[in-house]
Length: 227
Length: 200
Image (cartoon, rainbow over all chains, first blue to last red; front, side, top):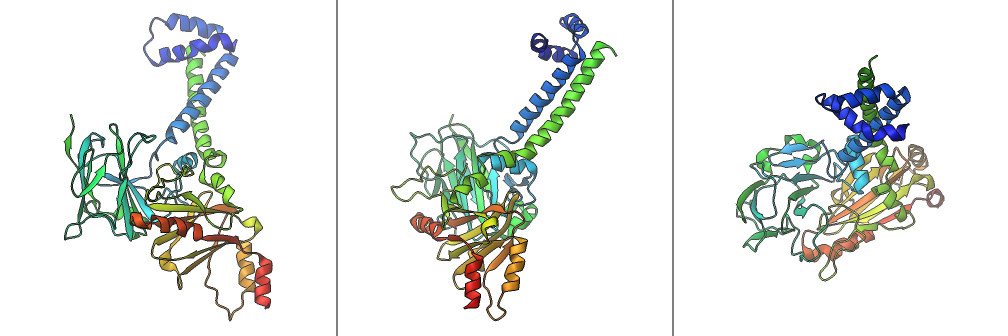
């Protein structure tokens, strides 16, 4: 029986959720005919399908929550610790990620500029300012998904030792698709969204990421976009 | 109950069931996953040095494909030592050099200890990971005149791994960073050896 009734189910539940439309008469006839067994099968299918789908969605890609927002950056202090939430643990397990422990460092990511626009590979960005105190840091850029094998890898990021600084210790990195003077960080791909990662190694702020000031992280300003 | 009422009830029950399935699946993923770091690290249990997980590209040599970290830091070499404390306490020894080095001890639930090369005594960092019983045994067998420089960490679980990270601040240091990861030794502290040492 379940084989004959199953295809009608999604439509039936949609009708109840939405307005009683043209299918309502068919639905009523179907409900009259269906038995308790049919409804139990429907319940189990809904529970298993929806449960698995939402669990997969929540643990795919990045961490769903647990980040501390600092300016346009998001710090992830707990993803590697024993206090990590179950979602972060599931994400780590699925990706094979080895997160930074609290005593080791702190990961900050940014997917948006200071105006809240998503970072796009066709635009030019100026990442400038200072970083929270750390023995070493690296600032890297990555696109989502696999790297384009045709595109040569010139540079993926800067370390705190490599970066050229102003006299006052501040730095400015230009993330641009074309060659720039100074600290030029090439775009990793021709188009699409990109993400920045700032990793602080051996930093005292890892234990208190909530107290990092907005002025202590680099600003991300869009200076132009290729049309 | 009207047919429609039955359907609404069935839908509500399905949604509650979906919530339960969601929570159960999310909680079960770490222990069921076959792509997590702990499962992948098990192949390194037989090695006596750290297994390179992410080797930095040096000059003409690109980063090898053994890297399974999703978005690795291109200037940090990563190695891993899996341990199983059923065979005895795990000793991780690292010599510190010019490059920044950090060791983090991960269990199944996450990292529970991390130390950097700033904690090294005379250029050596010795970490011993043991269970509570092994720790008590080590304390009982300790010679009071012989001060141990080991950092002893009690692990709550038998299985886990130690992650070695070496930061290459400049591209010219990448070769040295790769070598520093390989140079970290991870050995099982056999109790017989300890007994022989304290006896002699």
